[in-house]
Image (tube, rainbow over all chains, first blue to last red; front, side, top):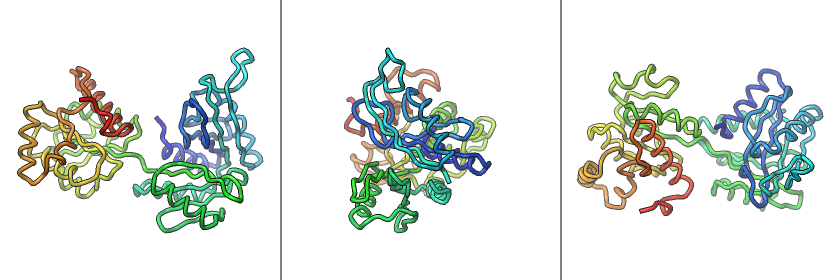
Length: 106
Length: 236
């Protein structure tokens, strides 16, 4: 129930409160993917988050990367593909692929 | 993302304006297009700028491959709006459901006994006459207008205002018979059959809704169907 405007507002509020903030955005999708291009997740430096970039499949990994982006300020482009359920690795069970851009809010 | 860009996007959203944000996916540099102005630390050549404008006009996100690298273009649109005429029982669950679906909801009812904060906590309430309110609030293609009062004095002027706008959804509560007499009245005001065909009446998907909350579900579902699939997707 959090649309882009609300997620960006939250990012602005965190920033105003002095927290480090990163934004993750789905920029490309292939095949079946849970969220469309433009879907967003805002993350603060304590790992609090609002929004989503998948059905919950890759958010954990994205938050880790977002914390690194908050620390060093370097944007990152992340690729996630089909998960291997046997290996419990991070990926999409739906069989799609997504690319996510993570940037720090300056 | 620069704080300045974040602030500009928020400002445009509040003013119900769409903007387009171009992001270099390697460097993170950005350019925000807001009407005739563009600002940011990303420089685009004329061809890429033209494609940014094209994306903004079409409202569709895309990735531009340019000589300098890959540029992601995202069109940031303000939340959709829904104007609910009548602070009646159905409007209570409907305004909450639509808020959950990210609509900015305004309930319009000049009858002070209905439009109270106690009945609609946290909802934007307007006690002007519906036609005056809609004249001021200017429904656009990102808007829906729902008439729920059963009272022609309130519903008709609202529907007339809605039909004069390019809102994506117009719905009116009432039976088939009531809807036929309503259409006859609106015709006398000069609306054509094509205009009147825009009104969803009886309102909502036919899911056998009985309670006010169920009727609200059927209205919200129909609105979603029209928004996402368009009029052509409607079943007879």
